[in-house]
Amino acid sequence: MFSNSYIFRFASIMVILVATLLSAAALLLKPMQDRNISIEKMQDILTASNIPANADNAIDLYNENMVQELAVNLSGEVKAVYTSSGFEEGNVRAFDIKVNEALKQIADFRTGKSTTEPLLPVFIIKSPNDSKTYVFPIRGVGLWGPVWGNVALKEDLVTIAGVKFDHKGETPGLGAEISTDDFANQFIGKRIFDSQGNFVSVKVIKGDASGDHEVDAISGGTITSDGVSEMLYSGLENYLPFIKSLKVL
Image (cartoon, rainbow, N blue to C red; front, side):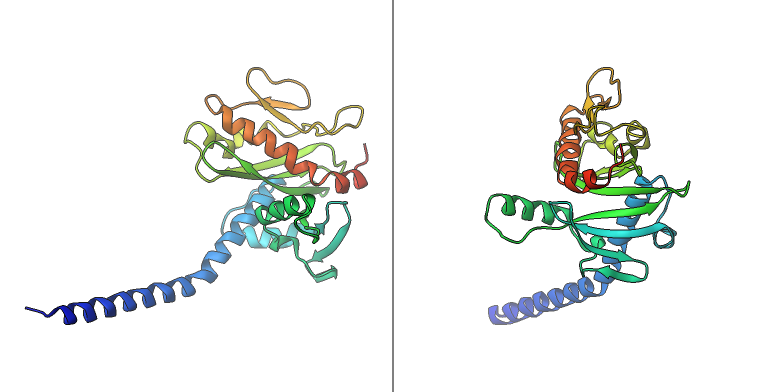
């Protein structure tokens, strides 16, 4: 029969031991976790630019095809330029900017809670036909949680070259379909400006989509589809000053 004090000491030692082991494991695994996050991010950027990539070749393909990473402010000014040779301007690497945090900073900046102007990432990628694509990371809300994506525009800064969407917990077979190639392929060739040059984005609609600014919604995934529409509009709207400064149509 063990005394209460013995049981208490034993339990305390076990708690400390397990906590120490878990902390050590977390520290040891963090570099691997960070690497996997970076690889997935590279894959998404490349996929939006129509460059197929997997976990094994994403780093090499990204380094081969990345022309520039830009950090731009809400006025469209380029504040930092990073290439494979290092920084050409500024000291903020676009790859390190977390879009969800940047969106919170934008909200604070626009409501006067912060005077620090946030920076947004833009990736210029050499596409398979040797032209360039401009990739804009965006983030929104679906039915069950965050949805996000990368939108690649052709050099005219008007026409969509490709997209890659993903989600945290949308319903399999319904809203989760936003991450499929069939859904993403609908966006290729769509235009985010109308013939008068007005920004209209691309809407995901129920029924038969038509024209340059609509794609078909996911059957049974209306709220997620609406979330993608809103994410596209609000996400690209943040980049409009930069896009308009370069678009050629």
